[in-house]
Image (cartoon, rainbow, N blue to C red; front, side):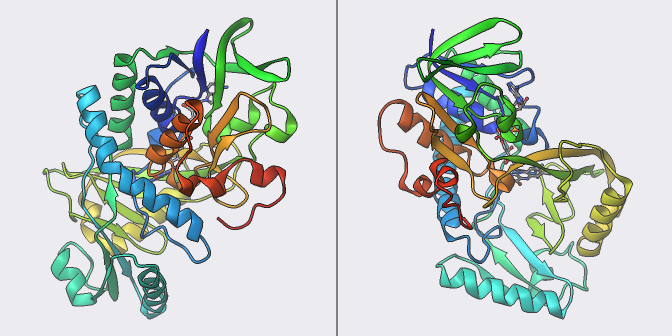
Length: 376
Ligand SMILES: Cc1cc2nc3c(=O)[nH]c(=O)nc-3n(C[C@H](O)[C@H](O)[C@H](O)COP(=O)(O)OP(=O)(O)OC[C@H]3O[C@@H](n4cnc5c(N)ncnc54)[C@H](O)[C@@H]3O)c2cc1C
């Protein structure tokens, strides 16, 4: 019997496992291939500013609070695991290619300033002075110094190592059901017959979270897969053509600091399809080249597609479900890497009987049960 059984070993499941086990509780993570889902594909931008949209104030509050928790989270994780995570305070430049985009950028900039976010408007010349690798055609931009990045694959390796040190059992098999006994979640069925009993079960299987049998209908989180294609490039030298994240309207370019660059990403409603398409790769590279021409000289090392766990209101689902003993931590859509620290803290608090961070309150599963879900 474990104190906690977690279904899914992505960034969310592993961050929860590490934080809960660090409290001295016994934890098992059930996942046939930990770290292979969306977390393996993600770019790793920690972008509460650039991702802030009109009408998403509560999601912005949640993102900013998780962003605020990132530095101590990373410091503890790197110390606990002896692994680097690629966390860099690099900042981002959001750029416009034409006057329409520049007008939209100005609108978004004013909106974010009104929210008290720290960013600075840039002329075309200032953009290029800051990042000489930007195309001369860039019309203007915004410097978002608070946007950072982490390397999600390094993060996953660090979380797995930290989990190993705190004694988390990693069960490399699919969860085939949530077990229910006397009206309460009692653990996880693994494979055909084996049952892993636990006092608390956490559903953290990303976009697959709605597919695990045994969960009562009103406790099933309304997540769906949202496909994202992404391209990885490698330069001949250790320096990338830009030093900050560059974000255009349809594309972003993330320099890793060692010559690697990530170009992403599409947002597609195609169910569980992870095929990489020529059209998407073409458009990503074309759009990225328009902003940072030198990426054309780089070697393409990988093209992949991942499935983000999307929800009807774009907000995550974090907290107690209608089934006693079953907690939910999923639906993080485009921000699961950013939101891992606050999600882990919230679930840990619920497991040990404390109050979760107030910013997570609007994102409880109950909003869907009560039909109250609105734009996050
Ligand atoms: C192209 C792309 C770019 C992105 N960029 C960013 C970014 O820059 N910043 C950011 O914050 N977020 C980004 N995201 C979003 C982020 O990747 C996700 O929100 C996050 O990875 C979700 O983590 P997760 O642990 O919930 O899910 P996943 O990482 O998908 O993990 C789910 C896990 O569940 C397991 N699983 C599935 N079925 C079962 C089962 N039956 N039993 C047991 N385990 C099971 C899978 O094997 C997997 O390991 C991006 C996503 C994509 C696709």
